[in-house]
Length: 525
Image (tube, rainbow, N blue to C red; front, side, top):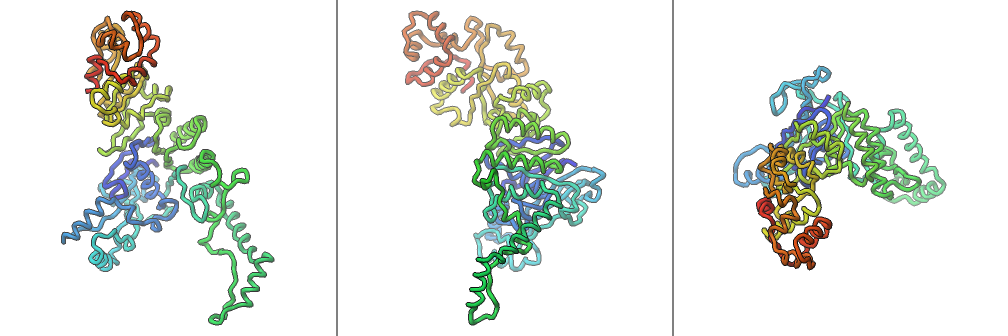
């Protein structure tokens, strides 16, 4: 029962989003504040009716709405122009699965005949007069969400409940630190999901008995006797102290988990994250949609590797949607499953060649995320080349590459083509600075499909960057920058090739400038 498509309107970061999803694995990447977490929250909300661990009706605030849309609405009112109050729409489209026939209809924003769930947060028209009066009196204020209501129903236009929806989602967010009455709300909810119904009942009853026994303690009974003997003059009722045993006072909100006799909230962040993940993955097995927020947070490399393997196994039977900042996670779970969120919108990175997909999965150390998130990229063969290109860029533009949104990324030359396939698919302006290795014809053949991206010198007598630097500069210039006294270019070349990193660092840090090869200057222009 995978979600085929999500539609979101006016929910925090999104004015409008229509996003197709893969049936198994989806990797959401993007810079901060572009809506990755919002997407996970929205999907969980429309499937479960919950936000931040509570019924969404209890979580309605002005900040849930897309602020520019609210501002525009309020501005129209001030100008005397009519307009519809902003509303939040979240829709999950599930296709035409026969098991979801009761949810099928056309009551959705796309008018599609599909099974699905719709969540609306909109003005309760019963309160329209009070709503309008408030806005007239408080022009320029925030949206009065106190007059809003939640509607949760199927595309067949029937109201739904968590019990009536035949699928479920689990959200795993180990970064969450929301507490309720001193208890980590997330860990409490996850424990609740892991326990069986019988175990939950047993825990609830035991907790209630414990609370009831509080008033029977000798010291508490003595205090209550004292209070009874000193009743006030206004009321004849007897005042006592006790512990709330009503339904609103539950074990989830009060009991604290422990790790080796240490309160959970006092454990290290890494240990907390690992425990949350362990419990959440146990609970996730029964969910149809698994939502994961930054699984790499606070986990060691070995723990993260085990986690990613577990998630990969789950994705064969479930739909998994992950927001991540980790190249390791991307590569291990399939870089072609990436959905890039940016200020321009979203782009799916699919249809990569199979060999490229397999390459990154087998060699997950490549920093693909830097390329995916770059506004512009320059690819080089190694760390020494990266330093030299960085210095060339700064000398030409007066600022570092990153100050202009350009990321210089060190990539093994065998991976150039793999990275270029990603850059081409995402339309990322990219230049490759490379040696000709003494065979220009082979270089041109190897990158026949990407020649517009490749910057090199055609002089086969100067096949390396070191030789190109010597060709572009005098012996005296390079001796000055390197703080050396080589008598000839042969000795200089031997040193530069044998000490690539030291040479690059000296050029990068030198107060003196050099002339960079023409192909480098063209790449950075």
